Image 1 (tube, rainbow, N blue to C red):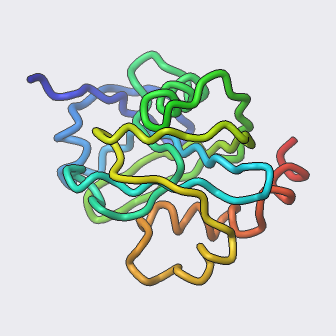
Image 2: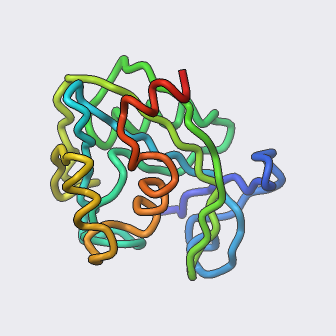
Length: 174
């Protein structure tokens, strides 16, 4: 099996090279692009997925509705829709761009493109990618921050723009 190839980008998102998944996740701090898609239902609840125990980064923790790497030659929007289809079975959704920012951990550096959508379609988690998934209230998430339940990346997104809820997101970003 060959290792996945990721684009390497500068801080603006311009592709400047490429590297393998292993190289990007080895502590090299090579900046590579990813997407986070946050799926809300009409009640304002946020769908979260629990990462599979086999994931190389943050196994077994609750994370963004959808998260994944952007493939070479792929736009962030196309990657978000592809990952939504692959991870939680959502198709033909309209997504809204929120922002991009760099997330740096001890193992990697990612240029994170964040999006949200509102749908009452029921996500169907792909059990090869995710161990479970469910909708959470904003208060329920707030009450569990800092307890090692969520990935650090999700907590950053939550603190940056999700804590206000979907109504505020809609007003700000549409």
